[in-house]
Image (cartoon, one colour):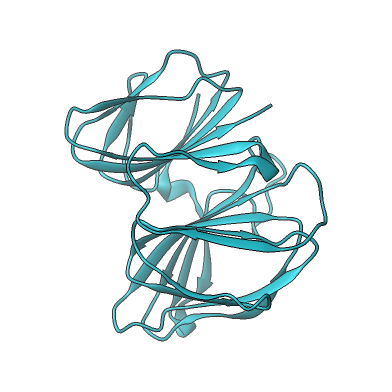
Length: 217
C-alpha cells in the first residue's frame, strides 16, 4: 500500500480565472514518469471553481471520465447534445471513446468543488456515451466495464467499518473526514494505492466520504 498525501498533489489551474486544480497523477505540464497511472486510473483531479469560472469547450478521446461533486453544482454540456447539472451525490460518466467535446462550468453563485477521475478503457475508439446517476445510494457499486473497474461510494459514520474490495488494484480517495486502512490514517485529499488487496478494512475515525475504485489487473 502506497499512501499519497493531499499536500503532495501537483498544483495547476488559473487563479486569475477562478480555477484551482490539484492533480494526483502526472497531468498537463506536470510530468512525472513514475506517476503516470495506477491500474486503469490515469488521473484524479480535484477542481475548485469560483462562481462563473469553468473550462471552455475542449476535446477528449479514449478516456472514461467519472465526476463526483463535493460542494456546489457543475454545469456540463457536450457535443453529443447532453446538458446537465451535476450535484453532490450524483455520479457522472462521460465515455469519450472516439472523440467528444464538452464544457464544464460553475454557473451557480457559490464555489464549486468536484473530483474528476479519468480511467483508460480496455479498447480505444467507439461511440461516445454519457450517463448520470442521481443520488447514488451508499454502498451501491457503479460499474465501469469499459475500464474493468467498479466505483464504490461510501459515506461512513464515526467508527463505522467497510471492507476494501479484494482486487489486483484498489484506489482509495478520501473526499472528507478521516479514515484508517491497515493502521494508516488518511484525511481529505489523501489517497491509498493498494496492490493485491486481501482482507483489508477501512474504518472511519469521524464521519467520512470515500471513493474506492476496484480495478482489474
